[in-house]
Length: 61
View 1 (cartoon, helix red, strand yellow):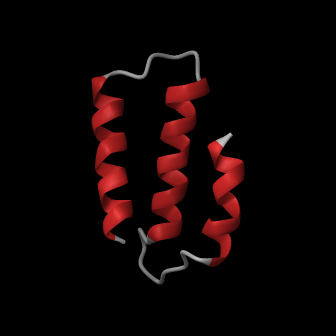
View 2: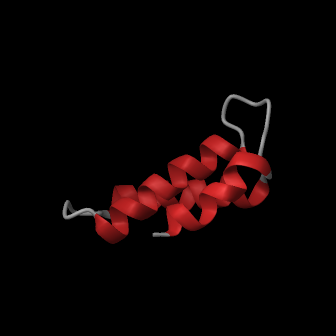
């Protein structure tokens, strides 16, 4: 899974003092990615838009 590949980076490379810093953004983004790829529940438009917002925040961090 993508989460396993990126956990190494989230623990050391992306530390932040902000409440919603890069590490928590990465965690939230990976949860949504896992849901989209592996969860049997529907990943609808609302979830997709939320995922896109998180990706944008993460790329700006």
